[in-house]
Length: 341
Image 1: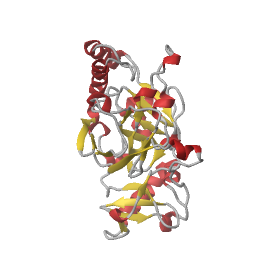
Image 2: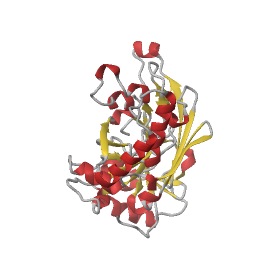
Image 3: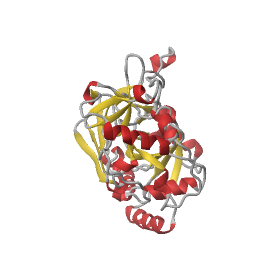
Image 4: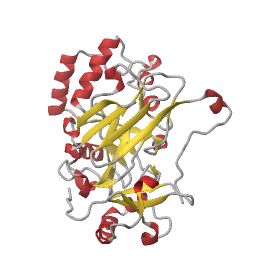
């Protein structure tokens, strides 16, 4: 992993009257990159040629005046990278998270999240998996992605909507069969994602024996608030030493270190690259720590406000709203972020 001693910066995409623009975030101010790098430049374009882009961006950051740009609080941040590539999602990748989910399933007397074994058995299985097993990774839809301040729309036909704040790595180059030791070199930077999950959609009675229904549980529109920043790996610090914190209506629900991961970031990226080719713009969500709604015995409802932070990656604030069957039947559209200026 490359560590820079130069001026730290982050990247974001911001709403504007003429359309979104790519910006560099330095010391609480946002520099519009379009006058410097060209009309319609996007964060995705920069990631697609990251080795060259990062060097150029670092020069800009090192030379820009301290008062350049606009105060960040005067702008509305969108999902930083649009469009995203493939979305890879790691499941059951925090020790305490898995144990708490299993204990909660026992208390509820159900298996709606597919986790119903005893806690001691789960602990033994986790330790065995850490020593001998492999990561568990599935794929999600980029169409679920919204910005860090957008509403999260809760489907009307399910009830157990849950939060899952996660660290996500953004891939910088084509990657195939990497080793865990070299995998971090294929990461452009890190973003924050809240991988919202409908737990009572995961376990279907009509398909017993076929596994959990990840499509139904994970990919409703607006279920992936992302951003506000893409922080280059060179400025993000140790990805295994970041603090993940999420509150609902002011009550802290998740507060854990990425050090609790079962498989670290490099191992996850290496594992995925051993199965398929990773490409620039792909995102690897690294799993959610303990403190989900299922473990607290509460789930999201309309009017709830989630606030999430990960060390150095900014803050998300998302309000939950109810999906209206009437609006959908009449052709109403859910909110989506524009991708061009």
